[in-house]
Length: 150
Image 1 (cartoon, rainbow, N blue to C red):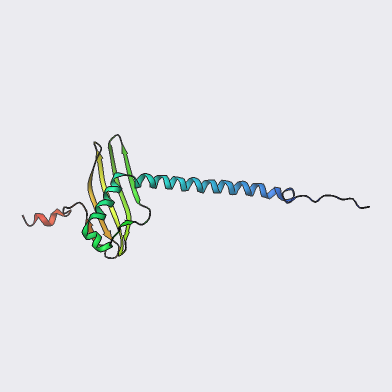
Image 2 (cartoon, rainbow, N blue to C red):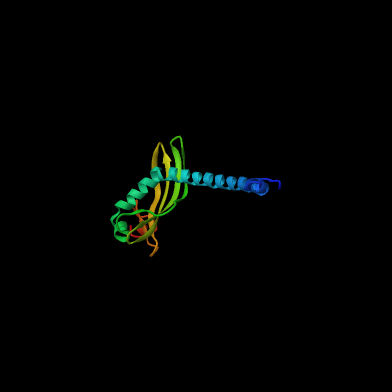
């Protein structure tokens, strides 16, 4: 009569490489989940900021920008730059990709916050196809040409 020896399970035969590999994969997956959460959190903070909201509203309400890009104008990717504010004081320097049915552009905002109020030194749109710069603040930024006419 033959002796029956039970065959080892897959895990019993392969635990020497399966455990370290599984541990490494778990660490890698957790790292990417953390990184994604961090990027999403920072992006969420920036998109809820006043400079972002005010600049996007101005671009959507500007008739010339609407003529070039079409309606609706919406964001088209991840913004770049920095926003910082504490105790009613801060600064912003951001760039937001925007798009409409007729084209794409980039929205730029530079401003400072004092006494809980934002004041913008620059707010403009640069059209991607033509590199045309459209001022959204409603005044001429280049004062050198205006001084020659006085």
